[in-house]
Image 1: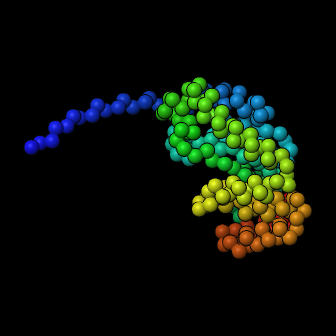
Image 2 (image 1 turned 180 degrees about the vertical axis):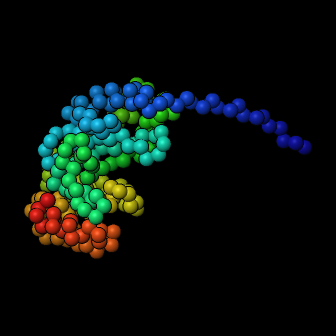
Image 3 (image 1 turned 60 degrees about the vertical axis):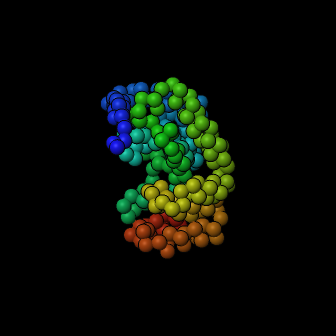
Length: 215
């Protein structure tokens, strides 16, 4: 006996759009939504808040072709980033980078060149609204500089097993936060984590000079 079956009807592929058309469609509603938090666009897909030492930040990041993942977090003016083997500052608005960052997990939170449904008003008002509620809580907590160590640990615990570019930055962030707060013993303990990790070996001398200078 031959088992009866029917051939499924192929699903029509959603038409993709050009990147210019994508940004023209996506940027205005995102910019309008973020304006309520006083974040303004500093470059395409990146929004930044005030010019203080702790700056709220939001970004649409493209980890793979066509799908943009929202990140929210804060940029810390007193924390350097590694650029090759040298510490570099990103203090201008256009060059700001997140030091504490939350990646919005789940396909339903991505914005896509292909999936038109992710660019509809329903998505903007629904998924984005939920994301911004979470971002609001983080930005509010970050207003208290003394709360930054606990905030950093909470965010690190969300993705403990990955060694992404941001996670590599976190030990530096921890050490420089404690240095900024004047908590010398905790700053030195946090520095030891960096000193014991071969990943940072090439940058150790230059990074230590910046650390000793207080950021």
